Length: 161
Image 1 (cartoon, rainbow, N blue to C red):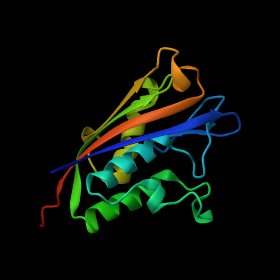
Image 2 (image 1 turned 120 degrees about the vertical axis):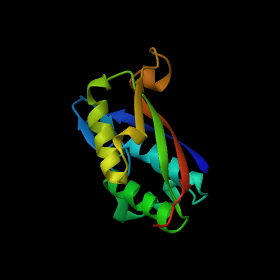
Image 3 (image 1 turned 135 degrees about the vertical axis):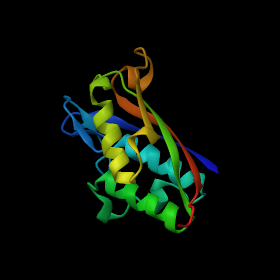
Image 4 (image 1 turned 180 degrees about the horizontal axis):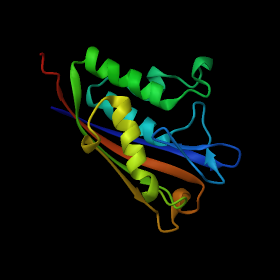
């Protein structure tokens, strides 16, 4: 078994959609970034890659490469997980994530986000946890300048059938 930890943070700015785990959430600000800036998918991608020492999202999908401009982060997550499975021989046991955002309130969207991520990774929705926390008005998340995510992934070797 292997464990990986991922972290990401993106600035909140007007004029961008707010996408978390592939779900567009209504809000007056969204996250700025080279791709669609889905901070949740990025943190999970780093957790998966880190667990098997395959680098990080920036190495696999560099923001200096124009092909990733505006990219759907679920597509990037799916490709990273394909490499984890096929190149490293590991699969997900479970994933646990904490999204830190003062606004918007995310609890009404958590189940839809979990379902979308589970479908992307072809895992059971019970194998992925997403929790939402505020930062009690402290730091960039608390001042509604950014959203950050911490993610942990537990992997095991793929069992041949």
